[in-house]
Length: 123
Image (tube, rainbow, N blue to C red; front, side, top):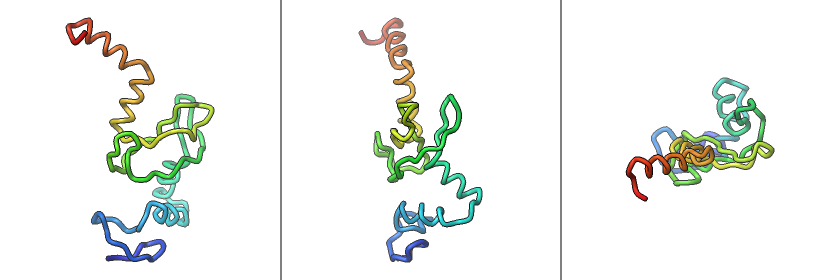
């Protein structure tokens, strides 16, 4: 057992490099640090969205540690939004799920199914 670096609550580590008892403590700790490069990276993950129209400041929901579509546990996630008027409306998706959702939204799945049928795939 070790103590959380932020709140000092004892907890059992789930990974070798875990130093916080929760995502909330991790966020609060980094929020309290001077504005370093590492802090900026974490801040931007939760407060910035990049679209084809540019970069925008937005307050996203906290990330719970899992892809919200497939449930895969990872820190390598993207914020997928579906409404350019409300960038805060979105999901935390792993890289694979994000790619699938983007393909679907941009019509590439339909094109794939048409090509598959054209070249002898299932009817």
